Length: 281
Image (cartoon, rainbow, N blue to C red; front, side):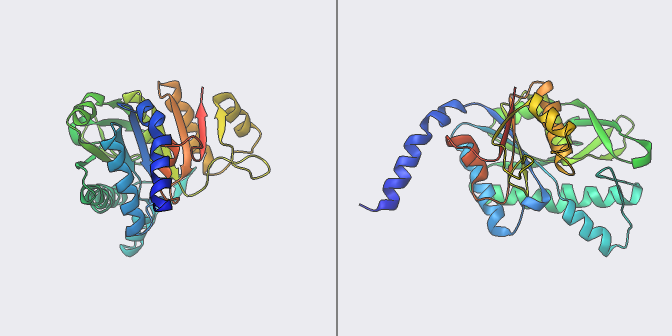
């Protein structure tokens, strides 16, 4: 008998407790622009999402698209700057951000999931008032902080076995369009749904200690300490802060993991070893 088949059967058997554990669970996945990679990587991610849906998980995909936004802004010769990791977004920039995120990037992910047999629908925070925002900081322009979420709408999609793919574009109470940080949007959506897991896919292996080793499991208190000591720094600070904020509002656990690794989501959910850095109570 083929050894690969035997190994596959053993893997499926060992996954059974985890399949049972996550049956009916809501898992929010933040798919970062840098983690999207090429068409093959996109197809692999889509296949994992469809498999999750077929085994009873309710996946909600929230995506970024920073590199694609940068590319179009450069081609249009629109200057863009960042303050504390957030893009300063004027009226011209927010049009480009919405065009790229709600259009090109969102539909590419939706098509990839549907091509693998899923039923995905592309949305932004504007649809059904999914994500109502207020201005984060006047100095940042049209950058929004989510203040009201339409979780019931997302639950109705889950009941219909539809996979939502959400662009982090918010609506204001006065009809404004807001650019929302992708991690922030994913955290707000996960909190509104009281998600079992929030998976933040990025382009590093996870949170590292002072010696550069990946920390596979941390408490919220340990994360606070690592930030205080300067071990967690740079771009990892907003990710860990998103994790802590989401957990304070009802998300059971958050995992920061390398979205470039094949089957990263499946490894995290359905194997004993997991993947990346798990942050829990």
